[in-house]
Image (spheres, rainbow, N blue to C red):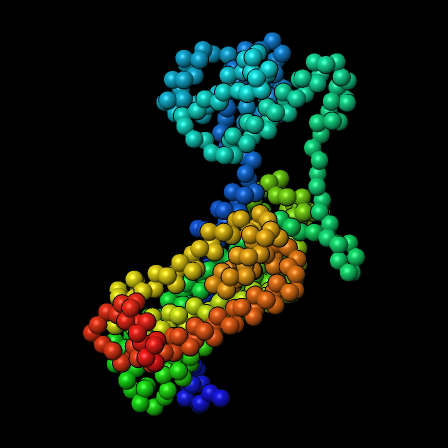
Length: 429
């Protein structure tokens, strides 16, 4: 049973941060900055992976006029050129020409071509060239065998995949791409929030210790009440911020068609995002509903992840006198936050693999990777329950360890502790 002093400390921390200008900035301005700098470019890059703004000249030295067919298929990227190679090379060096493809008769037999550029060009350019020339070469070979052109076009036509989700309520449309992107964003959001609020707890403890305020608090409250009250108060600030963000997202979703049209061309989006209807001159974007279970899971995993890392950061803050001293000790904790981010793409690519399942059940990785899996696929209930159990047990263990460090560390000044010394505190407490 927590004392009234515990709730006093928690409410004090909550009100102190909720009334600050930094809270308003981080709630309303930082998300826009983060969206513009980090998320939006990555999403657009994924959606435009087979797009390029470069213009590539086709030097056709074959007798089959394949250059004309390539230009016909993609006149925005390719155009015919009959000047000397030396002139083209000079223009590439001078930055006048993006590049050119030398198309020779033997290239058709070798199934390869040479793309000349100043260097780089991006994966989008390579993908466009490979896809277009692959289609043209295949068509040429089939027609060369005397096959009817209509049959060739039929055989080479692209297959459109429309995914369907089978549930107990029947068959529904599956928005795999959309939920995958949302899961990617949510994973990074949890990462940023855990990073910010965990460090905020550590900084608050260090400040109180350095200013000797902690000694006044210890005269009227237990160390555990002070530590956990601070954790709960700052965590409530984070939860308030998330609620505000979800409300804002709900309001902005009403104008999603106009907003998305400003950044992304409908032709660059998967078909599941686009409906055939028009709305006020815009191509209508179909924004799939986000399941309530996924939203609840995001909030719960954020809270559990926060308590896990905040307890560790609290113990670190109590062990040192200044932030510079905390850097070496906090490095292992920061690694537990960074490592799962490195595996987000792999988990998104195959969320049901054994590798993804094992990673998402590691307690320090669970808050980030399990959220990705929940948005990307239907995670078995036993895995979710197991992740909760493992995470809660780990939190309890970290609370016990951090409380021991806190009890001794807050009263030690003027000394930078080592891992060996902290281990001694744990044994003595």
